[in-house]
Length: 253
Length: 217
Image (cartoon, rainbow over all chains, first blue to last red; front, top):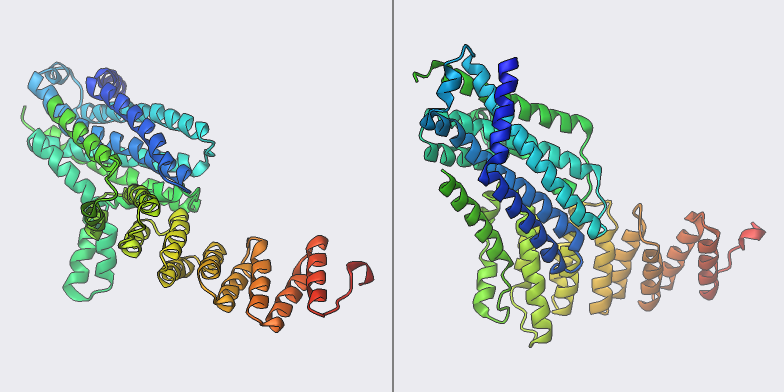
């Protein structure tokens, strides 16, 4: 447990010291200001546009960072041979992967928290009430970010960093369509129903973690639905981190 | 790696910034561009379809505002609004703007179609029938039709208090005294607010129907 925490702490520190994360914070601040400007261009919908753009900006920035960090962090450390120092110690490789994941995820959570505060400031400025639904949407969003990070880590250990980035982005897009594919399959019979069902089970349904659409209108879904979505997200994340750990464990370095 | 990451961030930034660019709303090319936003785009937004609806809404209001003061050459209003509402079917401001813009462009039936869609989606929400009543009232002489929408709105929970008054007013304008009396009576009998009941009593009295004052009951 101790090495895992040490690795995650180090990863958090190095990730937060990265230029990418700092640039992302500046970029997000600019986008939030742009959200304020955009809300002034939307007659009758100023508040809605501010919340929409604000939540979307925050989530999109975190997702982009998660895709890049997930798919490039481990290969880069292997390339620079910095990871070999850790590998030479009597530490289980699973702890390395899990520690890395936790460190990166915590860094992204911190980034979400900072940007969330900035958004709350913008909302207060515009007299937009801050509702529990906004917080829940952000919380589920961070689960999606964690899941994308884990997917990126799996691909980063299986292929080149560029392809890993591409595959992760594709899985993200597909993950938001599994519900649509499933609904299509339910109306069909035979093979189509079979393959759409299999497809639905094979990929994580990321749309269940998207509560931003409802949060904008202040609507909070029932607690059991939120819990089910959170458990689904966490379950997939654990599964992907486990796969990444197993791949890393069996990999010849 | 960082170059790739920064390129990605810049690309996302440019994509978002380009959607903010103030368009030359007088150009027909811009209109064509606006009307080419296929459903497929919504499919690949990855959960960001609300933002796309907002961007289209901003573009639509800019276009409509420009045309209001520059020749009133309205084009494709209904399909554009339909697209916004497909992306975000709960976007009430878009319904309000649709009612205003389409009503003003003499496309009342199109406005009603969109509002009927809202009614179908949220049958317990008085917002949609009330808006439909206003569209019909402001843009046509079909007072009876407007009255029906207002009455429908008034019958729903959380209805705006003026919905019932509008319904009564419309019934009177359409010459349907019987329906106006029915609406006043409904208000008189169902309201718990004494002042509202008094207003209803006076309304009935004006139509020649006497009901007891609260103190007489």
